[in-house]
Image (cartoon, rainbow, N blue to C red):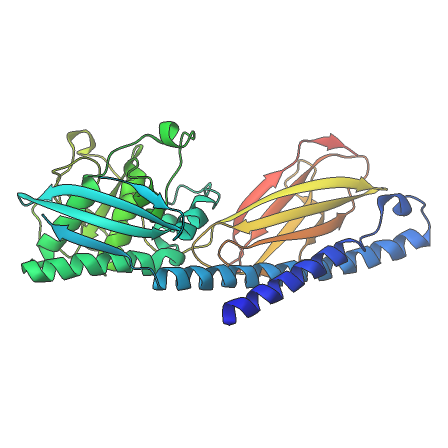
Length: 390
């Protein structure tokens, strides 16, 4: 009932957005000049502000509806089965993607069968890839948590029956991921760099180093293990703390994070490939964070510029109290005629648009600057136009 109510409210707001858009002032009317223009500009700005507030509310409701829908799907999924002892197919009727994996660990053959909700896979497949190199957002995104937990439950069941220690349970999990085929992004997706969310790697039956590292980190994190992501040159791997090992580790925040290679079979915790010995690493904590991107369009209306900025949250945490600032750069590190939007929040996957009316400085060689600021007063994304004369 709650999901249905959210959907109906979202659809109602969508209709309201369409109606509100039809009241925006026509560009031809603004070109007549006089006091009428000023009145129309003020009315236009008021309508745009109200429209943006409705868009913000609509995006928040749509995000909540998506979250509830996916939680319902994953909560009712049968998940997986793991057996000690492959074919792939999609069942269109049940909207379930079935996958089977077979590998060897501790001289024994293992088989894992997964039933993955098709809607969950397509949700992650359709998320735009973040421009950030912080791959932790692919691990900490919350909408697949229940499904990741369902996989871990099966590993827990079998390891309990086998009487495995915690170390052997981690070893079984790692050996499963290391058995996944290595595939190039350029070959499988057409992109030079295409990080996959955990569900994508499972459905796509493998990936490259960042894909298997993201999946490994997500599963170990669900086991309440202390893990980080390690970036070495153009290679991504995992670091795990709180275990007993004699191998290679990276010291971070007073802890030893032992290197864990996720591509190729047979690597143990602490085993470091020769090409990475003696190298430093960029470390990514697994902390949910917003990732804010934006784009904009502009047009002249008389002597002024109407700038429409669209901001999107591609991260794994809600964005709170952000705002847009825009103005003109005249080459002396000074902003001219800057304008700020109203503060806004963006849920995970949310998008919002603002229109700002700007007065360019006269007789200047200038360019337009757009910046997105967070609540700490830090610029998180920025862009500029080409230089032009006014």
